[in-house]
Each structure stands twice: as structure tokens, then as C-alpha cells.
Image 1 (spheres, rainbow, N blue to C red):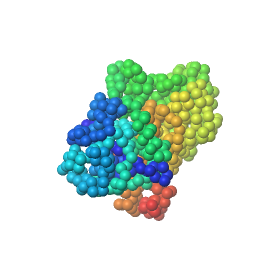
Image 2 (cartoon, one colour):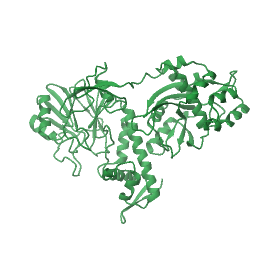
Image 3 (cartoon, rainbow, N blue to C red):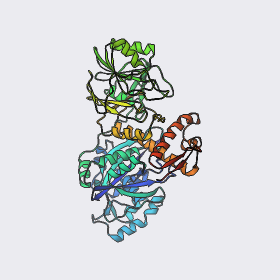
Image 4 (cartoon, rainbow, N blue to C red):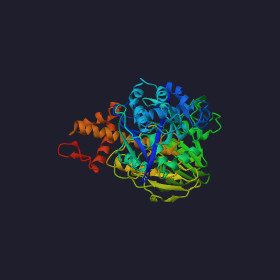
Length: 549
């Protein structure tokens, strides 16, 4: 799939609370991010280069250097200004003489907006006809984002920020965008967390950055002085068994092979092999159990922390003889403590066996009711949220993260700032939230809680090491909230309806073969909406209806 260059512009303005940012809502018919609130932006057009004749304040060499490009960086800036004019009716321009545009000039320019939007008038022709200059030095470069593989469209997008032009009201185009709003970044983030507005991952990242400043001037001063570093996007050399291979950015193994092989020598593995120990950091070894499958991916990851004579085991996994033999051999049986993230049967059953053979102390929360739980796990210590557990690899901070399971814990290792996430975050798929023990509202709150911690890497219960934890959390949260919107739409269209009726509607993008699993997550969404007063359940007839919004 072609990856198209694109540009996005976050327009900010002063406000009593500090600053506000402009967001546009995309049409629900859009192929990419339908209904989401975004910044003005779009693909770089071939004709944008011609508008370089009207640029002012900077040059292509300066801009390209800041963006770590060999050339053509100025075209991203021009595209950002053009898209902002087309989608929001705001034009960052002044007279060729340097004077601001007066009211008649603004009116004349606005009269040509629709022609530019439809492609009947080029942006260069607009600038030439109205004697405009584009002060591109007023835009500051913020970040770089490449749409992950698997999306219906992929863009290589550069994000910019600029002060909104004075005396120009914003107006959405009514075709690609159906609404617009000025909001403090903090409010936009809160609206996203509550499900009131759908906001995509790169937009969330920019909003989070903007929320750290108390004025537009402070944002621009920082952004102009601190261009972002070049993002690692090159394919990374690795190994797949005995053969050399390369790993593309955005694929599952990329962050791990980049961390383990920073010199690009090609020795890190691009596959997870059960039974093969992998050193992930100072005093951290991963050993994957041979229990791969639909729900466990390549297998359950067990983590060994410490050094000979003083090992801590996190999530020992299933009580398989071969797996237990390897664990005991790697540690020489010198295991001081065994921690579990939760008591699902692919994570904790080996704990009681290790205690019998090594005398290790068991740490975790007792199993709740349910057939999927390991009721044989009896902890010697039940840690509190925020508690510190010392290991030979460094202290662990305990984070209570209910949602996937009510007794779920994550452990954050100081130094490496590595989060052992169990099934709270898995790589490659979303986790099943299965009521009654699974709780969607608690799960989203637990995800949001991770954004308050300093985390560099996520070591999941299944899959490779993951970098950019804020992005990971944003992806998961956005996915769940987008699904929640589909659930609400299904209720509006089909209520009163049973779970069986709603599942193929709310999960029409999921293979029918796994609709049984999808129905459990659908129930979790409905229970969340019922708790919030946005859905109701009729026990007598077994059907769901909408509630008060």
C-alpha cells in the first residue's frame, strides 16, 4: 500500500484558561477515521510545490533540515496551510507587501475557497490572483507520524502548530468535515476519555503536548527552539531462525529488535520461540511457554528478574513439565519470589509448583470466582496498589489494573522503566473483557492510569516488547471508544435487541467465527453504558435498549 506524504496543522489561540485548539469533526462516511475530531490537514499535493513562489520567512533547506529530510520539507508546510484554508476557512497569509489582509481582501479570498477545495483553482493561483505571501516561518514543526500497517489508508504525516490568524472565523467545509470546535487541550482529552469525542492517536499525542503549556506564545517558543528528533522508521536487520531478515517499522518485532540491537548488527530475533530465553535488559530475561494459540499468541511470557542466587519470577505460566524444567534450570532453582499479574490459567498455575520446589514466596491477589481462574494459587502476600517490591534487578512498583480481571496487577521496574503488563496490554490484539469479572469501565480507567506513570517499554504477557507506551495506550483506548460508538449506534438502530442480535451489527468488522468472544466484550460495553445511564437491560425479555445520554 502506498504511504502518502501528509501535513496537519494544530491552530491555537489565547483563551482565559490559557489556550484553545481548533478541532474539526470528520464526516461519518469517511474511509479514514470516520466521526473523529482532528486538526486540519491532508495529503501533500503535487501542485503544492508551485506555491513555493509565494513563501516568506524561511526556505526549503532550513525547513527540510529541521524535519530531517534531504529536501521538499517546505511542501509539507504549504500543504498544511492549504488544507487549513480548505477545511477550516482559515488562511495563514498576508499581502505580498507584508501588510495584513484587510476585510475586503479576506472576503475576496474566502469567495475562492470552494474552488480551491474542489480543485478548480490551484493554491498557487489563489496566492497569485490575490497577491498573497505565505509566512511559513510562523509554523513550528511538532512531530512525525506514520499510519500503522493495516489501516485502510496510510500517511507519512508531519504535524505543525501555529497561531490562528486573527479576525478570521473558523468554518468547517460541510463535506469532509461536519463540525468544528475550539477547546482547551485538557478539555479535549477529557472529552475523549469520557467517550464524548472520538480522537485518533496522533491527535491525542499532540493534545497532550499542548496541554503542558499555559499560552500559545509558550507553545511556539518551545516548538521553534526544540524540533523533534528524527523518528526511527528504517527497516531493522534481524534474524528469523537461521536466516537474516528485516523488520519494518510498525510491525510487532520492531521496537524489540531496535532496543536489543541498537548497532543494527542483525542478531536480534524477529520471532518469539517458546523455550528460548531472551535478555531484554539489565537483569531481565523472557522465557515464553509452549502454549501458543488463538488467545495466547506465541505463548505466555514468563519474566525472570535478578541474578544467580536471587531471582524473581513474574507470571510463571502454565504448569508444563518442560517449561518448569527450563525455569528451574535458568535460575538454578534459586527463586526468592513469584509474582503473578492475575490468575487466569495461562499465567499462574506454575506458581504453586515453583513454591513447592524452591520455597519461593508467592505474591499476587487471590483468584476471584470463575471457571477460568486458577483457584490453586494462594498468595503469601497480597500487595497494595503503589507498593514497592524489591528485586535484584531493581524495585518494582505495584499497579492495580482491574478490567481484564478484577485481580489484575502490573509491575513497573525502576531503571529500565519497563512495565510487566500481563494481559492488561497484549501485543497484536485487544484483550477480551469478559463479565462479570471483566469490567470495561474499570479497564479504560486502568489504561488511563498508566499515562500518569513514567514507562519506557511494555513487556506484555503475550508478544514482543513494545515501545512508545503512550501511543500503545492511546491506540487501545481509541479502539475501545470507537467500538463503544458502534454499540450505541447498534442500540439506536435495533433496540430493543438481544445480545445475539447486536453482536453482528456492532462487530460487523470481525469474522463471524469469533462472534462468540465478541459477544462477551459487547456485554462489557453494554454494562459500562448501563452503569453510565446510557443503556438499559430488560431482564424479563432479555433485551437491551438505549438510556439517557
